[in-house]
Amino acid sequence: MSTTVIIGAGIIGVSTAYYLSDHQPGSTIHLVEASPELFSSASGYAGGFLAKDWFSPATASLGALSFEQHRILAEKNGGREKWGYSPTTTVSYTSKPAGQGPRKRGDDWLRHGTSRADVAPAAAVDDLDGRAPKWLRRVEGDEIEIIGDHDSTAQVDPLALCRFLLAECLDRGVQLHQPATAISMTKDIRDELSSVCIADTGSSTEVDVPCTRVVIAAGAWSGEVFRTLFRHSRLDIPVGSLAGHSLVVRSPRWHKELEGAGCHALYTTSGPGYSPEIFSRIGGQIYISGLNSSTLPLPKVAGESKPRESDIARLKETASELLGPEVGVDDLEVVREELCFRPVTPSGRPIISRVRDVDLGIGIKTRPGAEGGVFIAAGHGPWGISLSLGTGMVLAEMVQGRAVSADVSRLGLP
Image (cartoon, rainbow, N blue to C red; front, side, top):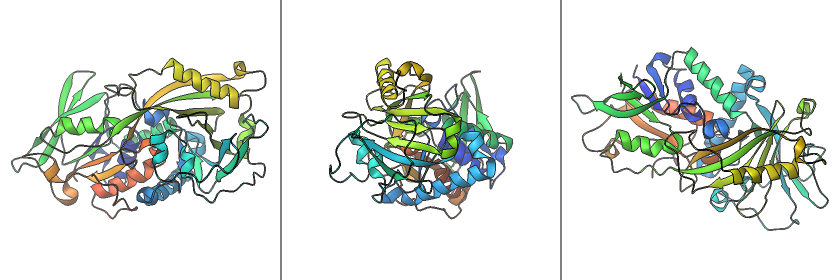
């Protein structure tokens, strides 16, 4: 059985290792993570919103598969208790008058700083039927529209989900190198990829891991990883970064007694370039995000950058306005202030693809078929958690030469 090295132990990496280990010994799978703290970027700090059918045609099949895999995994493993899996009522909240014209479609919302609720299916219902979030402070003249129900939207605590998947992988024998980086690769006498050199940054030691298959799933750092390993390649991996601030709070308006009525996801707009996303989670926490920036520099490793005070202050203002009781923000407890870097592509679509040997550079190739290969899985943007399990399943199938469970034919490299 060919050994597989997965570079990047975020949610895409651990999902891939999880599904690979269903069909090969865990000991033949190596996870390599550069950050001293696991899940310290988008995998741990994202909102955890899951959608079934909010995707463009290129990712629609993958989105539906992943949504179903989230449900199956939660049902089999107690996901509600372990990582807060919950079918969710999703609403759009606005103070603007009705009749503002049609919503934008596709992936334009990300580039224009508007809400991803704009890509929700058009068949939304207006009858609230008591399903509006009780933790939302409403004012006269506002509007709430239900744009997703329990059959089409859900949510998880992504950090808890990542920890569950990693624990499952380690129990199956998957080997974790962390903090560590893949610094070079070796080829055999036939010029085929034969090993990857992994440097342990904690002990300053190096080890050559014999392998014929490499998966790069390093999020916003994927392009840098590829350039390090394949220095003579002219291929550009078009994955950049979009920084996002978020806040986790507790509100007296959302408590355990209300969880039986179901969790909510709320999308709204609060000025140009700021479209808050608010999720009430199992366990009494509420997650708030929506302040994004393409100008914040990507740190060397995840977790090194600190949140900007001005952005956190604005999120706190939103929390006070929409979540706080009448007495004000003092009754809101701030649990966590976060900054993450999401991997994005110019098209808004992720890349899930095998790299052609001709694109690896002069003098290097891989074994044919399922015996070898270099693969890329990155650029999921704000949909990394939602698409994670489907991506891991499909990528594992591609690596192992099995029929894929979703149509990802339009998610190849440019």
